[in-house]
Amino acid sequence: MAKSEVLTNVVDFGDNPYLVGPHEPIRQELDRPDLQYIGEIPEDFSGIYIRNGPNQRFAPYGLHHWFDGDGMVHSAQFKDGGVCYRNKWIKTKALEIELDEGKSVWPGLMDSPDRKLKTSWGSDLWLKDNSNTDISIHAGKAVSTFYQCGDAYTLDPVTLETLGKLDLKSSGARQMSAHCLTDEDNGDLLFFDYAVKPPYMSYGVFNKEAELVHYTPIDLPGARLPHSMAFTKNYSILMDLPMFWDPKLLEKDIHKVSFYPEMQSRFGIIERMASGNTIRWFKADPCYIYHVINSWEEEQEIVLDVCRMSSPVPSKNIRQKLSGPYGAMLAWLKLDACYHRYRFNLETGETKEERLNDLLSEFPVINNRFGGLSSRYSYHVTLADTGVILFDGLVKMDSVTGKSQNYKFPKGEYGSELQFAPRNNCHSEDDGYLITFVTNMESGKGEIQVFPAEDPSKGPLSRIIVPQQIPPGFHSSYVLPENL
Image (tube, rainbow, N blue to C red):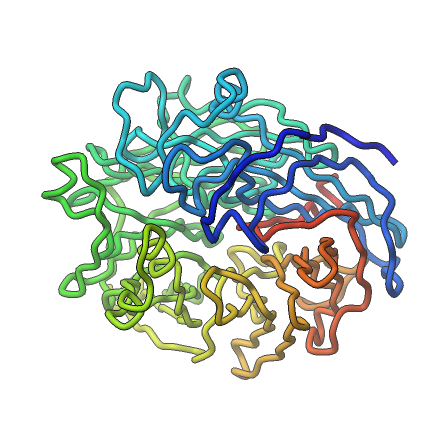
């Protein structure tokens, strides 16, 4: 067993609900500790499950939003029926500055901007880039990103050491938003960013050698807050959705997010390497979308599957129940997304949309080898009826039959965004396993759990106990064996 840094200083995180209980930050980095095995790990797959998330290092600058925490990655490397666990803070530029200062320097999402700071990130250049949101696999490295816009940090997917950054600025690009996407077919990394000043959006492509080979501005009518994008074999899909900052308040440096249900949603379809002025916009009903399931081409149509929120603003009833300094954060984090499908006809310009499942679910993933290709199965988490976001179960959805298979975690256990691990020489889309980290409040220790992807309702095949807690996080990825 090897151990890394242990922080002995005690930090007073106060009573913020996203800094206590299941969400309490951990203070120790582990490198291949001894693990306890319950059940056997299948020997017919290999790869690395890696997940990003917030893990605050210092006492907060101000009120502290869940999105403000310093990025920490956790990984489980599977090989020959065994597993190695690691966790490590991402060494961002901002965290290094705060380590030198010995305190938090940047205001958080619920604070007012400090325009005296020399360096800041985000779409309005006032936030700390904590790189805590997503983790992608590209060109043999893990790429961590920030939920708004920031630098794209590269990590060694095995050791989790921070290696550097993707080179954006020397080629004329700005920043990268959280949900960049890797096309497993040819190795392209597709990304976008957004800003409060024109161009309000830009879009780009890194090739499999991590060279920026395409970058173009995207014309939008004003500052927007898109969260995700999608791709097919030949196209990329960008979003202009009617939830964004109040333009009048933004002029006063006040960042108040509002939903405008009188406006339609717009989906921009662009050939992967085309100029931004060739984008085609397709209109749809008002909504907000955090996360995409998959997208592909069917003859003259583009199919886009998402988790869609028809009304992303907290209801009056929820807002009345939640008060105090953290009430607004808790209310806005009440997600009520459902499985939704769009069809964009490239010949007629027509949009068709339908809800495919009424179950509230989020953080969807697929077999990554099917990214941009027609897929049938997706794997989601369900949300617990708790004050903070916790994932109390997982569900496999079949978009062909409309059926689903559900699993609920035992009391006090909460999962993470899943990843699909294909079996060696797999023969079908769901021939493999589902992997998740689990926050176990009963034992006080984290777990790595492995489920059969064919029927996750049967429960975990194996549970691997980690000698410290694994707090909930955001997004994950899977390093396929061919990428190791």
